[in-house]
Image (tube, rainbow over all chains, first blue to last red; front, side):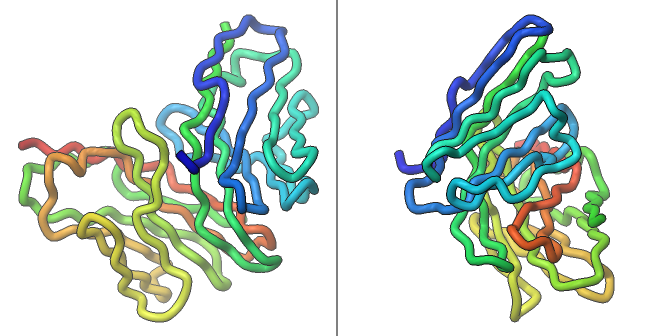
Length: 116
Length: 114
């Protein structure tokens, strides 16, 4: 399968713990996006990478959140000191793109985080 | 900031009925528009997209959407729905940001009864 993959698919953690999620984009895609989706809502943009550079972050991304894409391939999203409000589905998407243009994004299956 | 509004949270139809899901966005500049679908237990998939040209775009599985710039709308249509169309549908807009982040509507759940 050459789609976007995410790991783990489900994560249950206690409040205050740190969690890390991984996303592997489609191999030739240079752009990678993280979104968060809560029940009854559409995905909300969190952050974006072009190759290894993190170029945009949403105000939703508090200081407890950090994302990396060290070699321009896979990406990790870490949440420190989790709170119950962090419970959501975390989606990763990838696309190709040139600056100033938009291309269709391909989404992974998501990581469902539950903070107890 | 741009926003996207989907008119209906939950639509219930019988097979063979016609479908129209509303989507309005607020952004005055150039937009690219998308409809994504999420079938039960599956991830988001692209249904169709509008970048430029003919405002009536056709997607997979018999879906189409019409971009009406003057109304800031991009409604999704299908003449005859099937039970297998039961899913959640999301409208999304790219509006002028440099790197292509999408703004999504809140989604419409479509339930089709056989």
